[in-house]
Image 1: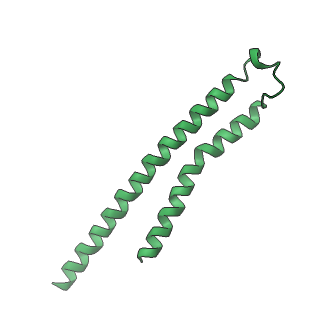
Image 2: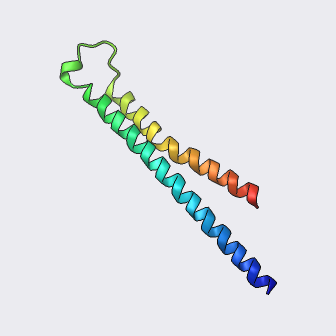
Length: 89
């Protein structure tokens, strides 16, 4: 009987961890989409009409910054999730 309770407790923890991981994934996806949208806007500013502007960043740095900003929410949430799981163990 004790084994059944322990097994159910493990199952509840696994489901809770899964739900938390899914929530983090949704949050990270929303933030990444926002970063990608901002990057697309910045690329549009690189159009020939904006070439006379000396403050305009080069296209490569805009793409690199966008990639960094798009991946950061996932890495942050994954690191946080791993710390939470480690504390529960």
